[in-house]
Image 1 (cartoon, rainbow, N blue to C red):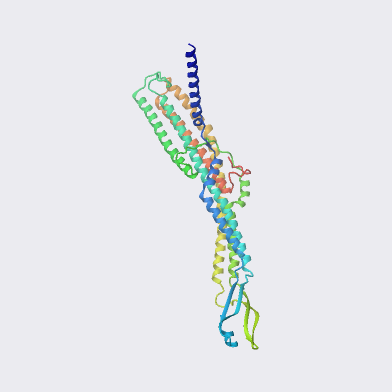
Image 2: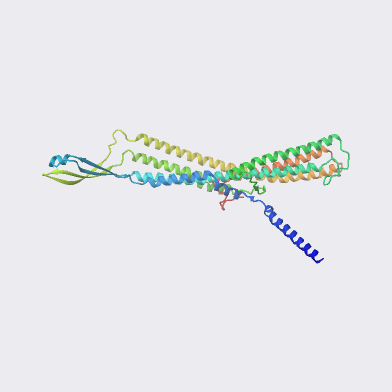
Length: 432
């Protein structure tokens, strides 16, 4: 008996250990997946985006141009060797009798070259900020599209569950018990309602798969990744238009174009200085046969080009044309940014107001009508046509409301781009 009890206790302990081990193994699988927010998605996209690496390479190239812009040209050295001295003193042979060191003197060119290179570097840096804004907008659009696809998928499942509960018999668990006879026409309407719900589920899953593939590609996620986004919520009101207009002067795209214009103006001055090549100063050390002996002497030589045939008028005209084009592009961009900012601000306000109106005056009443119609249909007070109409009205209104929320968030992203504001700028009022 004692041996039997001991064996039973040992068996119980072994079973308990097995259960504990299995519990430990299952714990990691119960860890919830990461819920992606818009901020986290943008941080990930800016980390892996090749567009930003290209802008960094452009900045490195412009930095190299700036380093080279004010560098003096290298001096040149020439040697002359002949048999002149050997003939004159009778020694014969060849000897080096002249050494010349020549240095070009860039008197006015370097200042303008440096000014142009500095403007080009600042333009590249501003363009990097603008490319980051473009990437933020693109990521936001993909994120909100995935949000909408996820919400539409949940809505389609809700629609299917609603249709499935309306069974022809009420003895099935979880179904509504009908208290009246269903005609063949009403049976057909219920079948159509369920078939439509199944089609909505398939359509929503297809849209979700497409949005998910685009989101994974933009963030360079593995194909098996299943990122979950935060739920779609109403958009917040933007900052006042006047405050956004004051920030327009610091828009990265506008600053990039301004710096490009400044670089073009500096290039005009560079072209003007190139009417004349750099003067050269040469130091000459020569050996000659004088007064019956070899003697050394040193001399200076200054070389200046005479602009008789070519005054570089074509280069100046070309640089002047490039500067005029840059000035026109700056005015055009300023006009377009101002127009886009006003339109986006107005459109976002309309979308937010429309979503609020839709929620209060359409979606909530449609839900109440559906609940009342469903109860009346179960009690035999409403026909199948009224139920189908109430169901379609509610779920279509819900789908339209979700689209309005997505459109509002998408317009908020466009407004940030038009105003030149990053999502991580804490001083803006358009951050979600």
